[in-house]
Image 1 (spheres, rainbow, N blue to C red):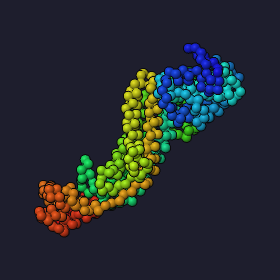
Image 2: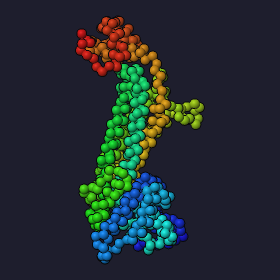
Image 3: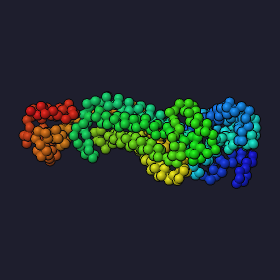
Image 4: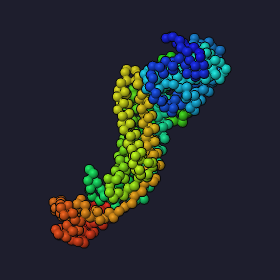
Length: 479
């Protein structure tokens, strides 16, 4: 064991722990077990790397401009900064995550997150130079690992880096699903199906028209997600505690974000108003609204598939892939587990949306103390949507089969097909025709033969699949 101290007191820690006393206190204060997103942890690593590189450039600039000059403030040794940068790169690559012991749900605006990473960087750097862990007189989590940084600019900036990276993956997943839906649309083009409104039989439609509605919705989702990058690209790194840059060199403030941009390859920029970017989190509310809209479209699509593939349709035509045994007591039962997974994910996203909106509004004056929970929820939603899109593509649409029955026969007995005659005989006579079909359980051919509303030739023409599916009618066709 080793002993570390802060101004509250002393604590014993495991000898080989890269985390320190501040992480330990946070772990005890927040005994939740919700795991922190590794993507966010790795993004903190690249933000720290950008800060250390910028510090190195700062050293070079002032020594060049003021050679042999003594300054009234302490400057860190370049070799020390180099060691910190090496460890920051390790964090960026996901190493030492087992030493990150802070849960996702916490208090303190992210100070515990920042300090856990600072302690990992400091102790790992001490380890690399052959010093005892916890010997902070050589490399200190505050003085060195956190140089020219604040929790309040490092943590939100790293959150945006993590979110943008995951959004790129989501964008690809949506487009992949859209292409799979498009293939299904093409495969079943002009294949007739019964249309439904309010779960009641409606006018005839086709499978390609149904799948085109999903394709268009996914296209909108893809476009909206691609616009989210614009909402997240402004970061407050360099703003310090409340965006004023107090105690931070102007050189660092001007250079750190361009340096981070080069390291990440992402189109991030320094916010014009660093105080605004520190105090307000409405950008996450807006981005999550896009995620919620996508979840709504996924739920609508997958609920349709679950319904059409259910045993409620006695002569069902849509057959969902059989993915796993559905019951521990009923032999041979197969459940629609993919739709159920997607619907569950969508409702978790709706809940996240309410929480993000509520906590963003809880920001107080210069800071929002609930950024950790906001960040956890938005990353959670993005990852759920990535998983949902992938599962629908790989486990449903690529194995979906449709076996059309003799739908023409059932359509001819559906009273709503009388709608095709309404331009010729009017609404009231069409309604009379539909009522006759329903009353006597007969086809439109039989009902019209009795009522003699249109000629058999015209009726036969109007009931052709191409006529039922075409977009409207031309006036010339009624003459």
